[in-house]
Image (cartoon, rainbow, N blue to C red; front, side, top):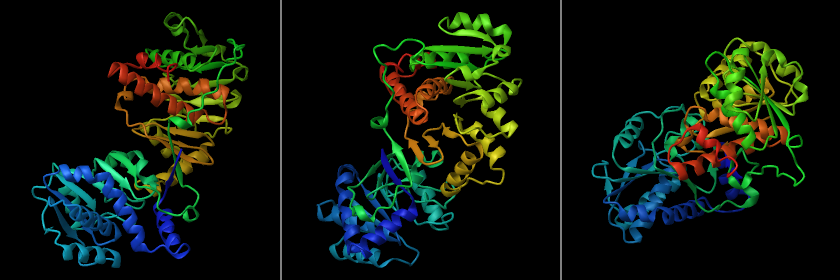
Length: 470
């Protein structure tokens, strides 16, 4: 688990390091720049022309400092492009003067660059970039050059609307990871995200704003040698309607492969024999038979359920000990406008999440990272559920923490993948009421990576085979 920090926290770390620990701002800039240079030295060396774009703030100072280090290291395939609109900080001025004094070349254009080091704006930007910076960002994005962003891609910040940022293939965060980079709307702009060494003193760091989860955080409950089908938990799935049978079948198979011992499916009468044939390990019966859901350790409501079974969700909200709501169940919850008892995990994709926002945060406009997180918190509080928002990154929000799983695995973007995650979440929730959402998201990503390594692209049926291996 890695700590993520907001822009205001990062600024506070910098100020505390200077005021409380007597570390000069120039020293912090040198530490960050030298560490970053070591990381991108090979990129600079292999470029025909590397252009450092330096804005007027300290982010531009970082770019200039790295250009100076590259020049002193013998690199002559570099140039600096100043983009300061006549304003610069003291630290940026000092780095500019140093570059000019030692002979670093300056340029007014990106022509010929096959590598751009982006130091136009840092985390402190507020509002949309104005001209000429707006056009410069567009020029950078339309060029064929690789882009390395310093700290954050310029135009990505907590109070900047989405879709205004530089698109980088690498982002080097200065000292600590920034939470805004992992919001789905921003993630593709950052490319590979790395950090320099943590040059802020430990006492300068506030409590983390959010957390980035990784495989080391995966902690699936293990089975005892004496476990059998009943001690491995009994779960129920409510779903299926009309022609939609695949979702409940995938969810049920995934629940078994994630460790559930008993799976019962409640579906429409005309689908019972079809689903029972597709998954003989499960018990399959009708919606009408779902009279006592409290008998199950956990219940999943929604896969393939359609719009005709809102009453099934009402019953699940009232009776289930632990409840996972997915797919059509999420849209039913939005229609009902109901909160849960706090024993619930919601697993929406972005479209379903938009329905939750419209139902539970009507006045929200999640157009910036700050507003996006505020909206997420508002929906979580209104529903009293843990949210698992599925996208290129997975966002997990409960009443206490905000976490991200940095999937970046497009092979998982296949029909039924979300149903597999729902079934996995169901099985793990039946066993562990606290970390099921986190464990299921991590396990789903790991299974996807294993499937991709083995098969390349795959179907959701194939994905299920890798859950146990993960």
